[in-house]
Image (cartoon, rainbow, N blue to C red; front, side):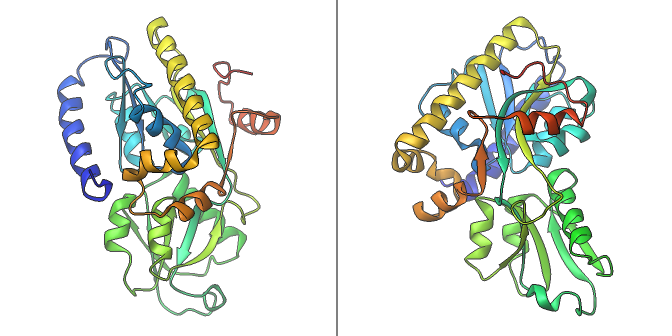
Length: 297
């Protein structure tokens, strides 16, 4: 199934299923539901799911079209956990009781701002510039950091709030614009001539951590399910490191036609957080007064 047309259908079907199941409390469901969107740092979960390492009778990954939709499903009580950044955590309805159970990665270039206007012409540009981005969360904060750091507060902008797939459909013509986007979607616009203006690798004041978030009051059975998800993710990441060709072929349906070399290049835009010294990341997250007690140290 091609991801380009299939993702919307999958999401609509799941929203109907989740709506009728929504009257159940998070802790009454036997099957744990996790919302995640196609982001390069979450693909080890997609690989693990494809390989059958995640028992779908116990754990269901609900693939969404963007971070904002994943957060929306969580806020409505339709999933028990979601993959997102600290910025989605901040916008969660119960974020004081929301804890990271698994650190996926630090974004280091894979979240970015593209434009069809050369950067050197921006300060002199007359008239409003369209900005295509998701509502709230990491993309909104990324754009604000860009405007602040580059001293572009004089720019007039018109924001269009769209999910990542809608951005590809509606924001690829010659209209002067910025696009706040992430991989694998960014590769599609780059192939159409959009230029990199800024990213999480170039901005000095912007730091993004991706994690798996859930309530710090999960039931014992859900805590066990979370441990299984963590192990499945690590197996998927190990497989990526050992056989990237097989990994690419297995998750290719998520990649919007992205070729192997472009996929491998997109991996350079993140830093995995499964091993090595993570003390700087933990110190950073502690500034948000985030409950880090569920993370393995």
